Length: 315
Image (cartoon, rainbow, N blue to C red; front, side, top):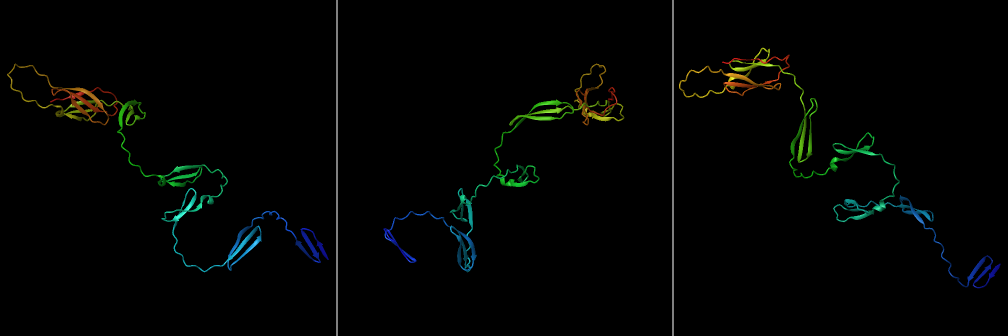
């Protein structure tokens, strides 16, 4: 059987089971077809052995599996140099220790991951300082954790400053407070001119001291409490007797004079001193007419007032 198709520009002839096509004239090229999908080739297994490579899967997603023969051990290489790293605003850089040139190793952008999700609100912290550290803990927590040593954040001691002006402190008011109240002191004004104000409590009123009496022995003025048994030396008579005057020139014998007045000793002021202080006597008169000012320490409480008695024995 044969079929013959004729005509311009194509002739097709079929004879039995064989067909032949004769193209008498070529038409215009058809449009370019759409691009096929890009093929993705990923590394699968990598094993050590006889060298081999296989690709599994179908395009556009295929896997390359490798078998790589292990070579003989190489000679020991020379010791490598120590490196140091630094970070700039844009890169991680390296150089040989002691070298002068830094070389970019990786951009910070290439090793910076995406921003993570916002975390949960953290606990509120509180801080304290010990003798050696600044410490922190969550508010209400039981344990403190060292944050930084004080030595790490303490700068060197500064230079000694110039001496400031000398401060002048003057006494301002001095006030007597009530008995039993507390003493106080305040400083007013600003350096270098300040004022010290004092409040001093009044002392408690003392009890009446016992009355005393005096006598003169052959050598001393003595005293004792009225009704007491023992006399105590107060002052030696020699201490209150002036030196002898120089002998005068002999005068003409005069008429017999009247009897002269005897030497006298009179008591001047009698002052009560503080309990425990020393007694004292001062002659404010003359050797012929002594006036004794006496200070007597306060004694124990007496049972009642007795008039002052004075017994003098002058030799």
